[in-house]
Length: 321
Ligand code: GDP
Ligand code: CA
Image (cartoon, rainbow, N blue to C red):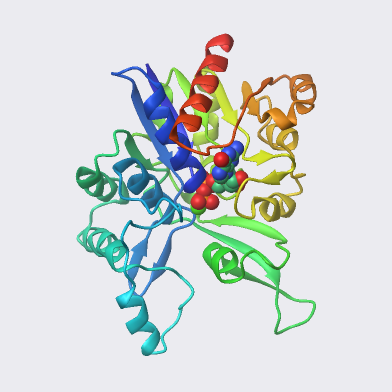
């Protein structure tokens, strides 16, 4: 069996760890990772979501935090702060820095991000084929009120909105800058074209899955493939399980509910949708728009829970086939 999964950072990575445990040996999993969160810091190219997937599946993730490396130290960050250089709000750990150094060096030598990601994965052996959604530069920007100019708006990088501002001010728009002129990375459309199942993990529907779907050709390839497309809700009981996804949904005019996220993806894309048992009442609402829906436990409290979710997703896909 060939599975394609789209993935952001923490929600995607934790689900993928469960998926790996749930599938029979010989199953090929291709992960299309979000690169809209990517940022250039101190001359380095940082790809937070790709790294979260790579570290989580490769056994190097800081479990409590959900991102970054185990046993991390922060000397470089402290030294940079001592020079007073900005940004000081982004967590660049010493161990993590090595990844960004290797990536930046390879990109500088002319390798595309997809080849660089493959090289980094040679160390981490994530057990899946991890592809960036695109080799082209795409950066998600968020429109907020300009604090320096009443009535005006300004755009900030997604990381500034998320990490520095903690999504604490209203977002008026979310734009994946560069997406409209980007192309899917090598292998992305091919993997979708050969997929038996396409999965949307419980990743952020706007700035993770939404950004991937904004790369021209990816949404169409998924819709045209005809293989079952099954998603899992990142919204449980009307709230994101962690993080501030409600802020991003509000920015695109979508209610923070499991049913509204399914409708946002739409029946043209999604064949099946899993909601948490607390959202059982959403099942008929989702089925009404033509998406098959089941209520099952969706809290990834540990790897086993994530594996059970993956089995439920594959079972639902099996019903659709
Ligand atoms: P990010 O890039 O690190 O923000 O990670 P993702 O986009 O992959 O996933 C973020 C989403 O994961 C958030 O919107 C959360 O609601 C969701 N999430 C995190 N943990 C869980 C969980 O245990 N269950 C479910 N259903 N969703 C989760
Ligand atoms: Ca992310």
